[in-house]
Length: 159
Length: 194
Image (cartoon, rainbow over all chains, first blue to last red; front, top):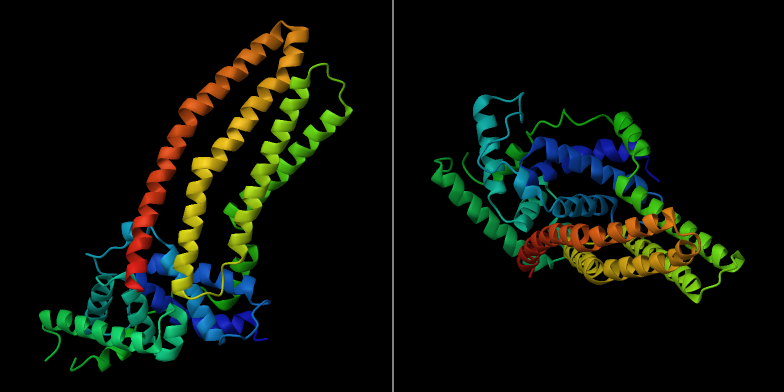
């Protein structure tokens, strides 16, 4: 059994980015990370390795995102998060803020799918997390990328 | 940016320094106690204890009127019904973890339906049983001793009327609005997963 601290160190940044992709709100994303790891802590002793550990944790995290059903009230779709990527150059930060804004404009499940895709999860794992077929996930990723491309182009970000 | 492949590297530049360290998170999760679950456990324990007290009183008390026994039994049944409803709801909480988003949304929808049924039927039945049981149970001492017990009996009648005709409809309306909002959101997400 992997110690909790090790699991947290490995997955917390990934879970935070996925939750941030869903909420576009750093404070709420942090709350969701905490809720996720409370569930991980409670379920770790009963975790039977039927799913991969990462898939299991991402399932918990994305379900917590979906459970935050009142999330739209708090989601600042028009405003950009101000405290992201403080250490990178300004233009990079602006691009990152644009990316989060464009993701926030997508539908709930699209936000989850593109966040998992950008996090680098295999599409088979994404299918197991979301509950759709592998083929369906592939098509949706393609469509979401097209949507994002259009949005970036509209803001003069792509050639 | 030349293409979407750059998005992945951009995505990973998000600052995660604000996350608490592993030690701090371990302290947080160990100290976490769900308020909602604690309240449910309190309701379950209190209901079972109250039902037990009522049964005990029925067995040991020497009452003249059948109405008193009937009232006590109704209150005990109401308490047990409340405990059972909360135990079933707790079970759903604990069963929740390892499921896909699709299964999770279905689970939330089922929970919403149960909540709706609770507010529309179960809660009404529990309150009705408790109210009738209370009035029947207290009738005998009020009749026997009169005086301030009549006043108490009147007060209870007034309290039940306020609960039944004002508090309950107001709570129901508030919860129904909340549940309707959740349903609309769930329908939207379910549609996305088709």
